Image (tube, rainbow, N blue to C red; front, side, top):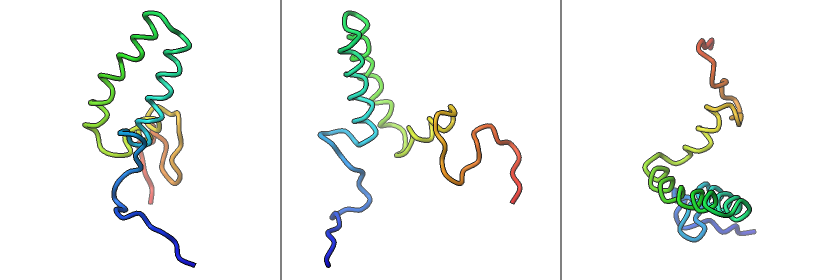
Length: 88
């Protein structure tokens, strides 16, 4: 049975013109902005104009590592973000 592979394995998954991590942040921000509404909602939507260029200046995989650093996510076989001494 043949399995189709993408033409370029090094390219990230893209939805519209966002990569998958940006798309999740954009949709969540727009969803929250629509619920909150008013000036605060517009400020959330406007914050995307600053977030997207900043995020694109960072390497791929920056958001999961940022969540790991803040203690919001665990990366398998990685030490915790507060680990200072390592034993091999």
